Length: 205
Ligand SMILES: C[S@@+](CC[C@H](N)C(=O)[O-])C[C@H]1O[C@@H](n2cnc3c(N)ncnc32)[C@H](O)[C@@H]1O
Image (cartoon, rainbow, N blue to C red):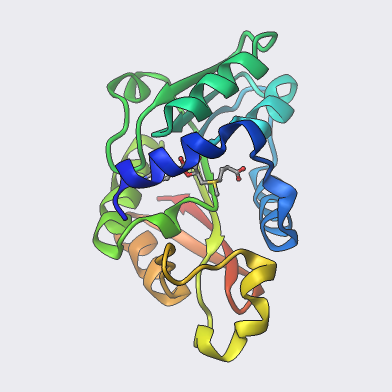
């Protein structure tokens, strides 16, 4: 399924979407937010923000936040739920095709939770490169998602826990993503949560 297909699928789910519906996904975002370590002068980009749940939680702890998602209904819900958060904006776009205005925002941290497994590996590589290019030296990119540190077939008992549906999802191996980070001048540090989910903290050099 391509990005348009995923956008349509997620638009249909926008009204009833919650990050912590699955324990594996909830554990992942908690680690992402811990590593993000929000500061009052941060300008933070959330790629695949869905209905903006995390940026809304962060709004009072950061200077500005921008959420990007290809699903129109997710962006609409985020804008409506964030109506009192003047420092947040939500823009339609994708990890591979970032909205032009993002480049002028002075983003110093980027995170993405449970999104990149939707992209084939060639698009993952391009997206990581484009996102890394937005960051200044020392900037952070935190990627939490399904990614394999072992053969997934050995861990079928975890599929429901992490929400892995082989027909819909294309997670990469941790080693592949680690290489993509390094190629994009991001020094990667890996936090494995279970054999199917990990968080990578990349620092721009
Ligand atoms: C599982 S949801 C995660 C939402 C949010 N990050 C969270 O943790 O609650 C996946 C989101 O990724 C978005 N998405 C799908 N393909 C994408 C792409 N190529 N670039 C950016 N976002 C994408 C979907 O529209 C959906 O909102």
